Length: 431
Image (cartoon, rainbow, N blue to C red; front, side):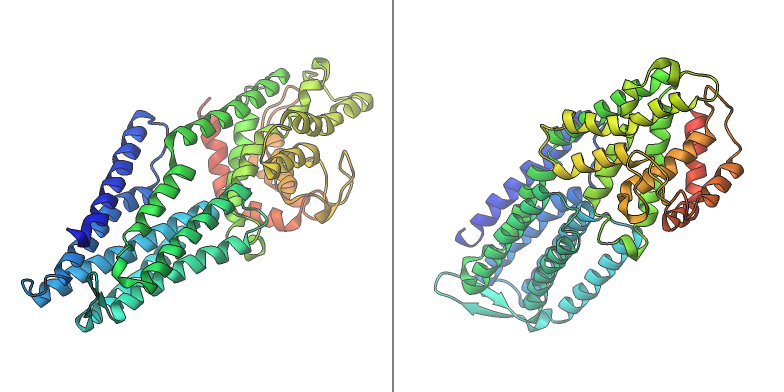
């Protein structure tokens, strides 16, 4: 019983989190299950169980066939490698965001080392310690080496995206890695202790508490919904239905996902940055709450004086966000929301407003917002004109490259053309 009592406790803990996660997700059907975390919850108790079983068989080699011992060790080490892969995929997803290519390459990498590890299983040997017996060999070294490599990879990703990953997320992940490495080092220095089963449990507790707790996830969704609803409420003052808010948010998502494929933006587009920009996008016109109705609802062209009043909505929007969000502890989100609201009418050639910024002086998120805002404005029906044909809308964006808009982002916009058109028809088909 001594050899595997820790594993029994770890199995019970992992099963508790598995059932709790599933029960909460069934109760809150609007929350999406994270496939990597769910798979980790299923694989971890299996891995820990085989850890306990092999701990027993190694100490009872006189009654266990050698081939059975090797087979059980192989299964245990395979599940450990799969656990490491799932933790890496989860971390990569919350830090940067996964795509099909990255998933396949990670699975292929892990598969190669699973095969390599299995080839050396027959060379396992056993050491009889003072407290218990334990196994060693190249297969064990390979498995532990991959675990360390995964941690190093996560740290490297965090360093590359350090400017755009939230401070809370960085702090949580560094604490998790520090605890995991401490367990790992203790296991190496004192192999008889047999505490490697704690590694997947620490990961489960850390991920659940900091990222996957359904109550926190749902609360965040409520907050996002409130921001969107308030933005739509402001937009309805000009006889709109809130469609501009929804469409520009969709266009922003498409462009940011396309930008992720460009190495130029790799160090910028962390998962946190993308999420902040998407959440801030609905507030870009929030300053219109101070614009008089007779200007917002005017069916004809604005006079020069009226246009000057209209232009104030960008600076007013920035002020509203600064004052309203002063209690939030996410400084980066406040900064992005402020800059999207204030600078989305700035132009690449410096002829925009309110500050006449030009080129790279304009924050990246405001440059992206500028393109999708203009595209939706000209492709939608307004109180003073009909919607323009899509071909003409794309032509206007193209003609504005290098003068009104960042030319690199215009290229990104056109690479996303099919998806942009798909979003356009999806939103208008709902009417």
